[in-house]
Length: 412
Image (cartoon, rainbow, N blue to C red; front, side, top):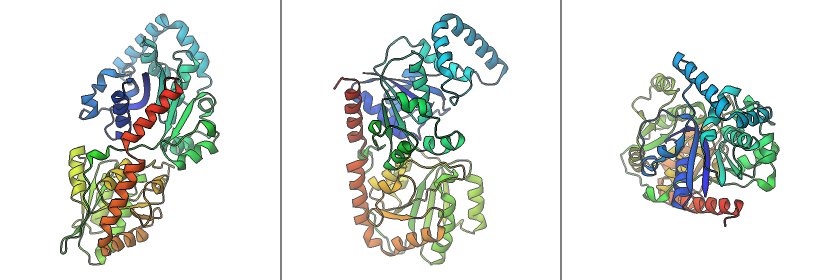
């Protein structure tokens, strides 16, 4: 099948769930063309991006940034589009009245330009994140494409995005979309609550390639610090502040401990300042960004994984963090929160421990308890690995997605 994939930025190495799905589609014989709103700016084109030559099948709008050259380029391309695709643009303009939330007319038109220029027909439209589903649905309403539309909902699109708009923003998509794939039961309930037809809604988890993560039962080494680790983008919803504050009580217990934080983001400086203020520099390290190989190496050297996710003040929430799956696949016990779809992955008391959001004291107790009962680590790690293998294995999930697509297109 020929599949059009709609995303925000590409390539985005942090969105491994999208890259893994693309790889699975190619592996199963499909042709994928990627329509991105913009280039991410990332230059390390490694792994799947390089092996599948994904940059060769990615289409971008013309660069119309707010520079003199950008404005000239915009006017030129709008004029060319108007002459070459007058009828199609007229249909887009008419349909645009139903889609006031997808941006200004000029921005929306420029994002449609790569599809206007694309001559081949598609068998399926596949959108990651609700706003891109809206965009693809607009193109279909205007007659630019004629194929079934599948939209994946992740979390941001049902939390922050709705807070900035309203619960009716997806109404055109819910009316005409063929299939909706929330990545957790939590978000499935939210989708149905805001009007998504339940009969066209199906949970489809994101997953990982378990073969890339060697299983290694965690053990306690007497006299050595217990190594805790987080792999995160340093933003509010990741809850790293509460992990740092929890370390006050953990350190005060007298247990040797080291907390290693991998990642970057807008909160790096204030979080570093907090560590200094709390006099925890000897126990907490910021390692910056790492390649996937380096992350795998760091995971292998750690014993407990922390993911204290919270709902941000803007309403932003997690889906189910893939890094939690990766940690569990290596056999590491995890400590996380009763947040979003995380309890669908982490079974409290079985593969890890779940605590309340923003509860640093509860988080500290969870850490010290697991440090005390280190003889449970191996069993928890085994349960965690099995959970990921059974429900979050990308190979199984990609086969299921392939079957779903073929059934939807009558190609099964």
